[in-house]
Structure formats: C-alpha cells, structure tokens
Amino acid sequence: MKEASVHEHPGVLADNGLCEPKTPAGRRLLDLLERYLPTLEAESRENDREATLPVHLFDRMRKEGALGATVPEDLGGLGVRSLHDVALALARIAGRDAGVALALHMQFSRGLTLDFEWRHGTPSTRPLAEDLLRHMGSGEAVVCGAVKDVRGTTVLTRAADGSYRLNGRKTLVSMAGIATHYVVSARLEEAGAPVRLAAPVIARTSPGLTVLDNWDGMGMRSSGSVDIVFDGCPVDRSRVLPRGEPGVRDDAALAGQTVSSIAMLGIYVGIAEAARRIAVVELLRRGGAPPAGVRTTMAEIDARLFALHTAVASALTTADRLADDLSGDLAARGRAMMTPFQYAKLLVNRHAVGVVDDCLMLVGGAGYSNSHPLARLYRDVRAGGFMHPYNFTDGVDYLSEVALGR
Image (tube, rainbow, N blue to C red; front, side, top):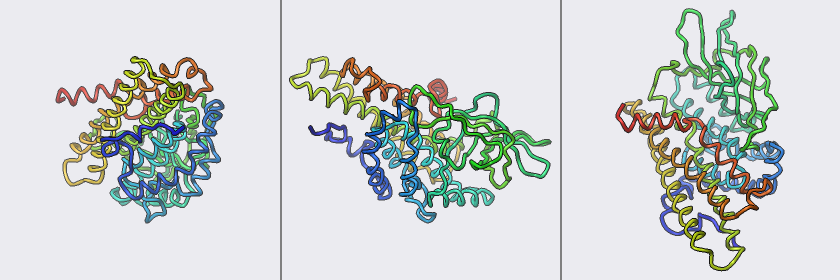
C-alpha cells in the first residue's frame, strides 16, 4: 500500500508550507538525511524504550558531514543558512524519531548562531566562533547549548590568574553525552563590576565537568537530555561570549533567540504529520466508507495541519528575511522576528498536540500501547510546550504585551 502523506496533498501546502527546501544547500541536506531514515524507523521503538541516544547514527552523520550542515561552506560545512530549510530537515527526521531531531537541532542551532558571531560579532568573539565552526565542519566538534539551571544559578567568576571558573548545574541538555563542547548560559560575577550574562564555551575534557547519565524522560527519550555539573571548570577569557545584563529587557537580543530556536517548530509539525500518516494508513487498511465522525475528524486534522504549515512557514520566512538585516533599529528587528515566532509556537504547541490526540482516537486502543508508534508521538509532542523561548505562560505574557502595546 502506498504510504499516505500530507506532502501528497494538492494545493497551497507545497507552495506555502514546510514541504520543500528553498535553497540548494537545504536540498543537499535533505538528500543526505534521507540516508538515515530507514535506520531511524527501524530503531526508534528500541531507542524510546531504553531512553537511548543512537550514538552510532550520530557518529555516521558526523563522518558524512550532516552534523556540519549549518557551518559555512568556507569553513567546511554544507552552508545551510535558511531557517526554513533547517526546520524542514528537522521535520523529516522527527517523523521517524523526534528525540533524534531534538538532539540534532542542538548542533544545527549552534552552527547558525556561531555563523552569525563569525560574520557580525566583535573582533574578540570572531576567532572563537571560527575555530568552533571549522571543527564542526570537519566533524571533529559536536556542540550543544546548556541553558536550563537545575537549582540556583550557573556562575562564572574571575580567578586570580585572570581566567574564569564555572560552577553550577544544567539540566535537559540534549545530545550532551556525545558533545565535545558546551555553550553555557551563565552569570558573570566579577569584583567591582556589575553582574553580566555570558556564554562560556567549555570543552568536554575540562577539569570539573561531569556529564551525568540520568535521562529518563516521559518523551523525547532518544534525545539524550541529561544533566551537566560544572565544579570549578577553568575557562580562558578568549572562550567566553559576552551577553547582556540580567533582568534587563533587550529586544535586540530577541533576534538571536529566534535564530537559535525557531527551527524547532519543524519537529512538532513533523510529529503531527507522522501521526496523521499512521491514522490514514490504519483507516485505509480497514476499508469501507468511514463513518461521518471519522471523516469530520480527518478534515479537521488536515485543516489544523494546513494552519500549522502556513503559520510556521510564514514565521520562518520573516526570520530568514531579517536575520542578516542590521541596517535599522535592532530592537524593532528583534521584535519583528520574535513575534511571528511566538504566534506560530503558540499554535504549534496547541494544535500539534490536538492532531496527535485525534489520530490516537481514530486508531483506537491499539495506539495506547507503548509498543505502538502513536504512543511515542503522544508523549513526544508535549515537549514543545516548554521549549525555549518561551513556555506557554511566558509566551502569553510576551504576546499580550505586543497586543496591548506595552
């Protein structure tokens, strides 16, 4: 039986949705990722059951250049800069294993943000960005971000020799177990100076760094989202990326947050599509004319998928258009990128979950067994609600301020 897919639908999805790449580099990435889909399909159930990141597959992607997708071609990568194309790539992977897509996003995201630092950063940060990008492009470096604190605050302090020391603990660091470097969100505290925010880059081999084996999540179980402990890790001052002031709203920084995170929307669109595909195949297998309630539910599923495709593609188009535009008011640019991102994220967090729920209802009790792929999608899709930025409540706060002109 021919597999049913939302990509086969006629009409505006192919033109306006998250369906086809917009750049040659994006097409090359999709063609490369196509090689891994059969393995992902075959191993996803076991990886979910055992909460295992498929290390062998990431090693293969590293050797074959997929992990250097968002590294500039001049530095050895594929040169994918389109956020639309990155989101589309993640959607295709997420349709087979969303946890792997989430882990892969860590590397893709770091490539995108370091590329910006390399092209537009200060003279002190460009060499660090270039060094990391070259190693990512050659397959030597796997870099992920560490944002969420477990307790208290992760703090960077000045040592007597002029270098820094990092202390704290981060949680839900996807792909951490195979990373060679971590870009860590921290508070920079120095005597006689105001507290600042910074992003030290820590090598896996740094003294005092411990990657825990403590992942047992409800969903995204193949993402390897473990905790990292920093106990006096030494950091050279040349390995610290400066950020803003804590507690001070900087709308210009919203642009970087958008670039870093917006492609994750593709993961949840991919999950919803995968659930629809499973439901359609099951309904066709049963044969006969479906009852009116089933037909109504399928129509509503496709309408919501259409809305998600359109909203996400529109937000990505805006982000791509403004990503390198530094000619005007940077605060206005940041808001112009973040606002459609948050509109799309609010829709995705609500309706991707609704699509998976409805597909589970159509398939019936079989889908409620952990051995059924819908059970994994049912758990995985709920991770979108607390992905940075923002969780539901923070996103509502931001969008209500936009609506009320505050």
